[in-house]
Image 1 (cartoon, rainbow, N blue to C red):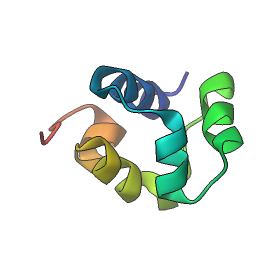
Image 2: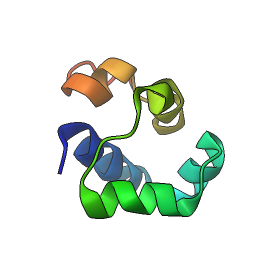
Image 3: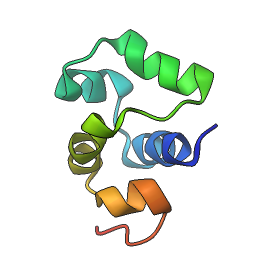
Length: 70
């Protein structure tokens, strides 16, 4: 699993958020989020700011694991 991917799904779990809500926020299908999880791939860069905002962390945290920003 990619490091960004791992942080995203860990944060979803920690915060009790659902992948379906992330999908709606990003305007993508649930299958896209599911594919990230199953394949262990990281999302495209165009989604990173919205994902960070949804999860309440900084983009830097998602990309590097530093400066969670909560």
